[in-house]
Image (tube, rainbow, N blue to C red):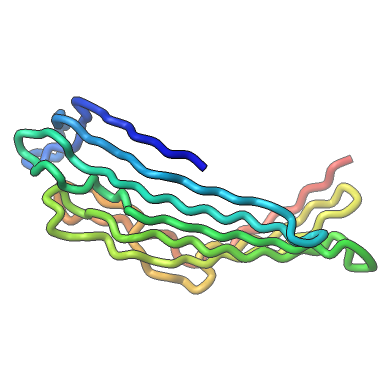
Length: 174
């Protein structure tokens, strides 16, 4: 568990009137808590869970209203990742994983008039680890969830999150 409060002054952001320049803003404050727990529930079954609450806002500025939320910083984030690896028998070393990643709403524009919507992304994996062989297929965004991963903040310039992505690898260690 961690609790924090961070205050930054003269932070540079994109100039809303000229995207080729950056300007300094007065003061920003972020405070919150982060919780992580990890463990092995049964032999071969591992779980890691995380939660973060962040209150991130403008605390002083001439142009941006005090109290406005910082760009793309959600108040709530959570994740859960679990894997199970078979421990005995002819399938020993074969494993499966499933992960859930939640991102709460966040400001999409500096004036906070538009919010990035929340989303839940699901990832999965199948892997095999035995006798120096390590192979895996990782699936990110299993259900091809359409979401925005970030914002540019000076206009409604949003960056979409990655679509369904499958990555595989094989490695042999001697």
